[in-house]
Length: 55
Image (cartoon, rainbow, N blue to C red; front, top):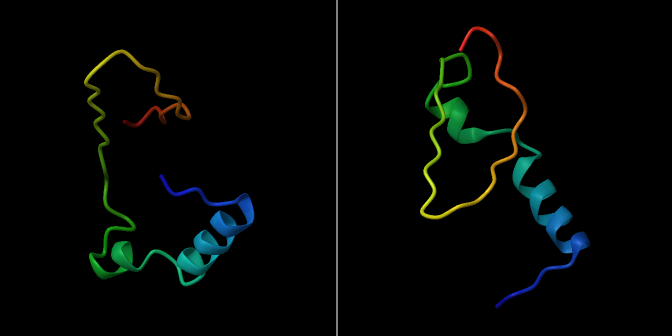
């Protein structure tokens, strides 16, 4: 297993996100409605912010 320090993780994320989400821009998805679906194979927990009323 490979372990990364918090500083290494922060540096990798900063390098990746500083230019924005290129995939979303390329596919022109920024203003498209979306639906997320999660399926789990065994008991677990999912923590997420509440959904807006318009969903």
